[in-house]
Image 1 (tube, rainbow, N blue to C red):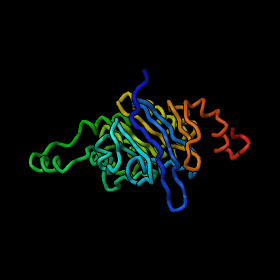
Image 2: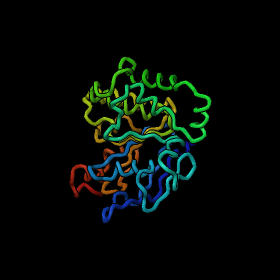
Image 3: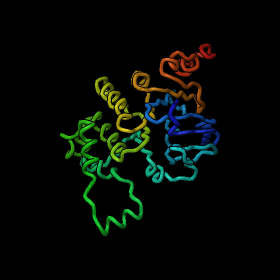
Image 4: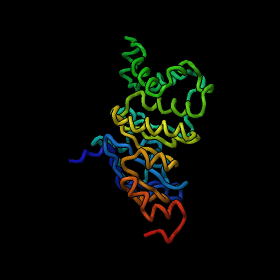
Length: 253
């Protein structure tokens, strides 16, 4: 029996003026999988992440997460329900240490928890932060500012900030951008391990070797439309996918 979808997207449509960024998108993400979302530049991948996480309002469509509708739910409330994401620009706090960057992201407080913490202060979420530092091999860099790190290490800190609150689903926007071959391979091994930690992954990246090597399922966008979905080997052989990436109209079915 197949697992129930963790994320269900139906008829999701986003327009920016006369440009259709997402066109009636339907896709599902099953709990415990690493799922890829790929496509040429301008295909709508980041718009999809922005919309799923509540930063962009769709023209129409439905998004359900863990069986609950996300219609009208704010980005911070989606985070409380178990959503986390990274950004292409990383968005690190360069005036804080690596550890402090993770502490900031370790909880998603409500007004009740803010009040109770003011009255009965709790210690920092050291256990969760320590677990993520160890998993990402950042312990030796924990007290360094992000500005002193390599590009690959900064990407790990951004990923760590998404993981430290232990989300059910993490959406990664170009986590391999600027990484060398060795760093990308290490990232792939890490992403494959996340379902064992209870975290499902939706991965957006241009590195086809990474995506096709680590994902259980891959969805392909072209001009905002879903043109292919399936296991990596099936998607790799799809004529519509080859046409989208190579610009060969004769390759389309």
